[in-house]
Length: 312
Image (cartoon, rainbow, N blue to C red; front, top):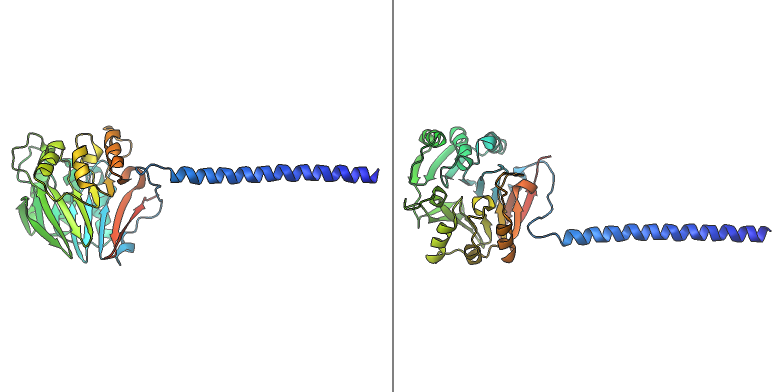
């Protein structure tokens, strides 16, 4: 009887161990599948990190390019050594954030401030910067707009050391980096977005093209002029609107990286599926502010890497 009872206990124990093993293997399989799904994540949706924004941690790098999270707008900050370039400043809703970002990081001198065009979501934040920081040179498009934000911007420009109109073919130097104006309005454009100033930044073996809200018509002009368009980074035009990032233009650039400044759940449905598909077809890894927050590219003089931070 004892032997039979002991045998039954051993059978029960064995069954328990088998069930336990199945559970463990099942958990491991789930973990493996999760990892596989992360690896299969499309290039247009890299995993976001959630941590406190701290721009100062990049101070040891000689070159940085940051796309600030300004929602449905655009603000690009470039640092080379101890000199700064700002391209656009975001809209009203995030203008105080832009000013506080600069103050927190003790950026009080801007060598070049570039306004792509006079839409509110591109120049409102620049007004705050002109009032709170020292701007040596402001580069603006040569046209006028009949809006209150344009008038406010023109008033703020009086605080800049000098104001010049953007001119295609002009080169400027920021630290050890250069930026060239590839396109500037000649006032023949029918759409205001096509008046956007387009620039190309170069540092060591890295290059970047920023187009503001320039649409396909301007992009076509750049392609036809055989401008030097190949680049590592493309700051995607018009927040990923289908009116920009035409297939021919993106193919001419062949950017390894694409930064999209866009508001979360925006009413324009930016970025559009067509633009994302075009970027993926050109093997561009996409980073976007609506899902990842502020995006910073750092260059150590030899190679570059990209970091994303999102305030919790």
